Amino acid sequence: MDKMPRIVFMGTPAFAVASLSALLAAKMNVVGVVTAPDKPGGRGMQLQQSAVKQFAIAHNLPLLQPEKLKSPEFLEALSSWKPDIQVVVAFRMLPEKIWSYPPMGTLNVHGSLLPQYRGAAPINWAIINGEKETGVTTFQLQHAIDTGDTLLQDRIVITPNMTAGELHDKMMVVGANLLVKTLNGLFANNIKSVPQSDAAEIKHAPKIFTQDCEINWEAPVQKVHDLVRGLAPFPGAITKIDGKIVKLFTTTIIAEQPKETPGTFVTDGKTFARIACSDGYLTLEDIQWEGKKRMPILDFLRGYRAP
Image (tube, rainbow, N blue to C red; front, side, top):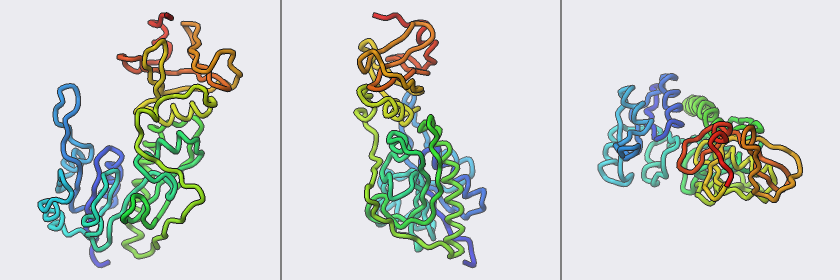
């Protein structure tokens, strides 16, 4: 192409900032940014700006925050930017009128190796399901969510104790680099899109709800460990100890047949705390007691009194 294609970037959280930053570092022609409206949050419920908005302002990028993506005002403002292509990273579902608008379509960065783990929480579910590998996929948006033709993929190893937070941070960087590589390939006309194949077994990644966070202690210890790390640091795996709700974030496995029934809290009150599963113990490394802050287990035990 004889001139740099005009890119409109759409995203909201810190995960998306890494991609937007990579576009600027690669001297891409970002002509505008779309992010979520400011929302009340924090102790005083003050209006909070998204991470993408803060970055856009700091880098003097034109910004839109539409309440409704189908509003005539937003469509008019978007068209005034004359985008050749749109990039979506951790934003929201777009109406067809928006994603089909640019001549080169709309490119999405998704945190899995599509077609596996389509949905809102691919990072969490890959770890919860005990996967040893995941990755990032760039693909072109179409009608059904996360089903568009794929462009490039990059694989990421999931280590045995990796948490969702750690995978998120790694994927953020890998995804940003893959985005730049994809756009360079598209602009040079040397990437071919590939329709997603129908895998024999499709694993989904729906939004995480409270019931998904509740620990079943009768499950194998490896499965419980995977649930804990797949929900750490947010929203956190939930259980009850002494009748109080507790969140677990970091655990280690003891592969030893428990003497106690699954769900039994075992501690010497000073140096360790563990909970029995069906085929082993899960040692608690840190914990968040109901109404308290997250703390190392040794700090928790100093104030713990068994009922």
